[in-house]
Length: 334
Image (cartoon, rainbow, N blue to C red):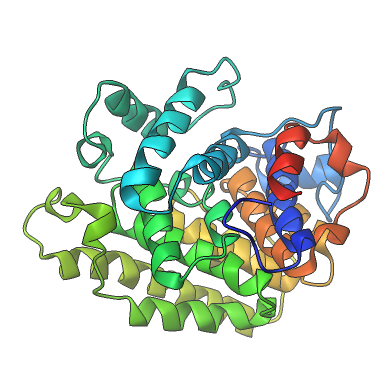
């Protein structure tokens, strides 16, 4: 397992990380396609099997692995110990020949600043709240740490590239969702539990983890800076609650909760897929991949959520040897 010892059953950690990779691989094949074309190729249920051997993933899984290895390598889960490991792993990813999966512009731009030796608060793209902030945060939710440390780690790993407060808040909520699920919460409980967390944290600025990041936009106090992010997450969670209160028409969830290109939409659209298909884990991935938005990130997060709830047995047994980076995923979860 990821070090710091996961108290939840190991199969939940494996289910979550492998689920993220499986969703990423399915969504990789459909991203940028209109829903009508996805349905024409795969049928109304969407893609339900991996393509290729190995089935290739995108930068979503690559960066989640970078976060996981940085956490394992850090001698302590404190900002001064974790930040340099995250920086090194992100820079290794940015310069890797395998970084050829349409990586996000924000991540590349921030990594260029990190490579020049800038403080991360200066290298980050302060105005970006793209889903690159939270599509890689799942490993944080699998750690056995207190909630303050979980929040600090989630926001720090987001902040290295995405400096917008909504990216920070959505990353914390994504990690918190994984934590709740690995500890036994039901998927249907998550929207309310996440909204409660957002309201509790609305004006909390974690200066020990974020330093002076709040000063980048200008004209705000630290509390006002974070409130902006939490309020946008609460708005997104409200749309999720409204969508779940209505009958499911089986259509593109992006129409209801957003296309997932930004962090709070990736979170709630993935949750919509996970909640609607809590009893059909592969169906949750397929639903996430059958979208007009950021299909790989939506399906990846849906896989992380359902896998944390249902464990490794949720997924077809042969997928574990067919997915790219299977060796790393196994090493991190056994």
